[in-house]
Length: 230
Image (cartoon, rainbow, N blue to C red; front, side, top):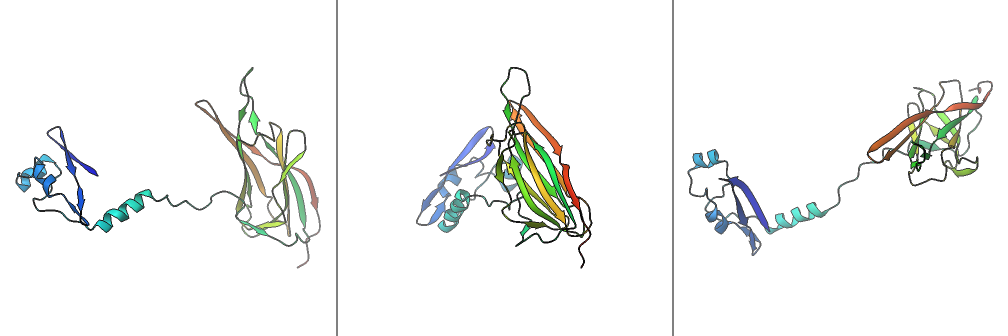
């Protein structure tokens, strides 16, 4: 193991740390340091890394623990995207309002004539803007350019609480949808309240140029019923 000290007079001071019998001995290396014989005030003015003339000893366990920490994997942050806020329901129950929202998705896109299309990743964002009323999701379906169902994202009805959001991610490598892909989001309310905010953001890269844009959902089907009696 080698430790490179600060520069002194344009010369790098190299100290060889030798572990012997469970201790780290820098005694010999300190004697070779150009600033070892310089008074304390001069040492500070030179800005050199100085070691005392006596051996410096650290327990070997500190060296081993440092090595373990350096080699261990970093702690991963908690998931920031995904349907984590959805509370699965046994059944949707009676809903006062039901709507279906169409959201355009572009898995691939042409940017120039006579050029290959670039692949884009897409994130479907569902946001409950109400401060008090939960939203009930009954289906989140992903369709390709031919109108065929690719994937059903929701296995069972789920509830999205007030001011909560949920996201569904379509990988850049997932080219099945094509340029005409879309989501159909089926949602409802047990009592009157604000509409669910449904958006999708596409992002990708073409060489050194980044591509990113947003699409908004459009209600294509709705059914309003009398409020459910409490």
